[in-house]
Length: 80
Image (cartoon, rainbow, N blue to C red; front, top):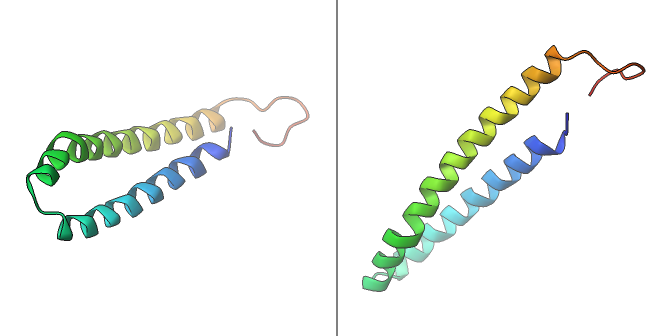
């Protein structure tokens, strides 16, 4: 199995959490109609999509690990 996949998913999640913290900070000083439109039209859809994607990536990683354990190892290899 490509061991980079879970690490890349974790990196994406960490980066997303950092961006959320920065957004919360920005919201405290940017409080006008443009911010509300940005939040409604850009930020909230992005947040929904990213949370959904992270969930699906987690599920895909679990499936990949299950498949790895079920498939026979190629001759001469101790692991995937």
